[in-house]
Length: 97
Image 1: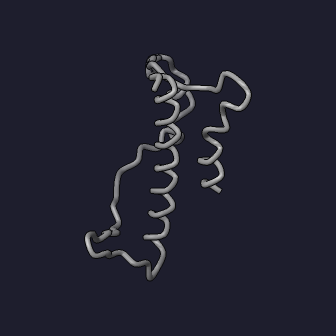
Image 2: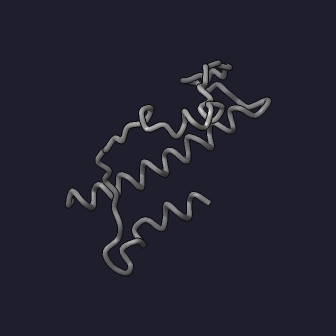
Image 3: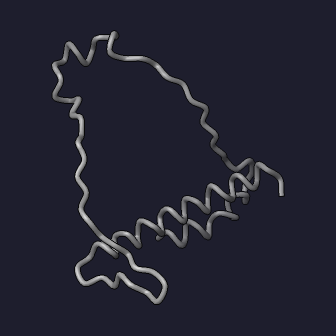
């Protein structure tokens, strides 16, 4: 398989798997959800973390360039090059609904 095609296929599969994980997670959070199989047990617990609320900073701090820096990163995306090519991934879209 061409590496570009494989990349697009894998990204689509990963997106489907992430959506499935989220749906399962939501199910486990419902009261009375079954959390145990013959091989695994899901544990649900509460976890705390500190969150920095930058929107509460004074506006002069938020707009001061001394507190900001620009960073660059490389981003890889994909798109179909012709009609019908997206049909390969329509099954994913149909299963998401």
